[in-house]
Length: 165
Length: 165
DNA sequence: CCTTAACTTCACAAATTTGTGAACAGAGCG
DNA sequence: CGCTCTGTTCACAAATTTGTGAAGTTAAGG
Image 1 (cartoon, each protein chain N blue to C red):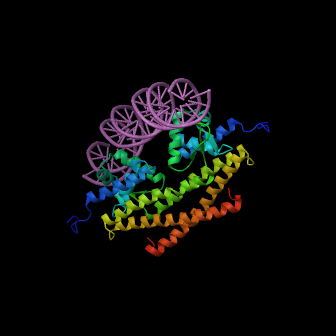
Image 2: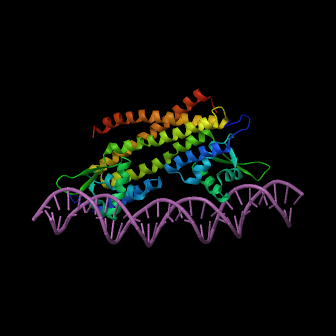
Image 3: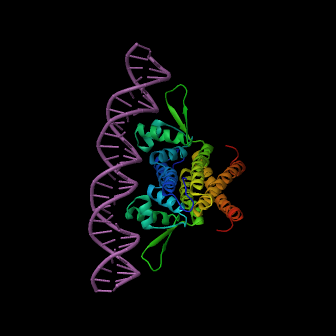
């Protein structure tokens, strides 16, 4: 009877998943509080939680929730909604805009490409180092184009498998 | 006469590129010393430098070089070679094995997928949260497969454009 | 073997990041 | 209007990370 039917979710089980997956994200470079908040939203049934609910579930201060949410909305991983008729704010993880965030790593790619273009010029396109940089640049340009096409294919794949969300 | 021909590289110009590009990588999550060492290798004409050369160019201690190189070889971004007939060690950035490193982010993906599979089971595949996790999992599985194909295409594209390195 | 060159490891100081409590700000409600 | 419920901002203490000097290790060269 680990999960009595009708009782809804076992907070213990939910928490274990949240902490475990969040830990993986942290290891991959995401700051800890944003990671925990994000996964808590991902694991919530409605995909929406209030600041208070997040603070209670994760045992963190309102300030920490605020900071994490600011971070997450800057990188487009969650959106904030003002709940009409209340002073509560609700944070939501849209299935898709979360994938978009991955794509928006593209912004990072763009800056890398800029730096590399400078490098090719300043080291000389006809030098061994310049050629190496040019090839690296070509790789990123290639990836950028491919990722775009890949996301296109994902949307099709997703629709077919899950129906449009 | 910013670059007298025959003089070789202007250390000032090289350094500017190294520090600028490394800064971008740091911003994207790479630790600072590994980023600087990596870019210094990338920008070297031979694609190879000794520990002493790295320390001198970047103005860092032998210990810092050692730590950075350990990191970089763990993530497969540089390889170390013992130089026969000398106690010097040489560090090399292969054009390709650097791309492989990006692909090896796949290892990270695998761990994410494992965590998500657990989540689907423990939250219940028939719950809204479970379905959301399942879709996220499907996305990563999709990406993993696609990246593999993409690298295949890159190798072809690269060969055509640069000849085999 | 002993010396010395080259790199690694370790302990620690400095710098950075993280999360909190407390004061603050703003919007509904009485 | 003022009260109160929410969330934000800020200064700071704690924890973590970073890079260094110094001691340690290994192997080449005499």
